[in-house]
Length: 186
Image (cartoon, rainbow, N blue to C red; front, side):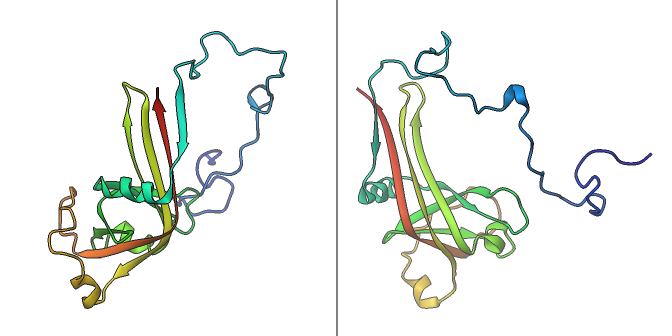
C-alpha cells in the first residue's frame, strides 16, 4: 500500500527522515483574520483581563540584569540547522559581570548547537496574584576554553546542575540585547 500521509510523504525523503511541516493553508472558517469592528462587542465570558488595575512595565537594562542575578535556572534557546523551530532547554546558570555562564557536557545538545547566537530567558510568576516578570537576553554564545578565563570564575560560583552526569564544559552568553517586562497588580 502506498504511503499517502505523514512526514516525508510525496517529498522523496527517506523513510523516517524528519521533514519540517509545510505551510498550512488557512481554513475559511478558522482563518483568524477577521477582526471585531468598533460596533461589535466581545462575547461575554471571554478570557480577558478585567478591571483589576494591572500595570505593564518595560524594564530598564540594569533592572533586567538584577533580576537575572536573582535566579539560577533559566532557558537557553538556539536553532539547529534544518529544524523548523528553535530548541529551548533549561540550564542552571550564574550571572557574572553581565555575562550568563552555565555548564554543559562535551557531547551535549547545547554544546553542539548553541555556540553562535542564542537567547536566554528567565522569569518568575505568582499565578495566584497574576503578576510576575520575564527577562530575555540574546547575544553570542561561546565555549570558554581559555584557562585564564576559566580561572576568573570564582570556585563554587556556578550552581550545581540539576541534570545528572558531569557538566564540565563552560559556555557563556554575552548579551547584546536585554529586554524585560513586568506585570503587577495595584
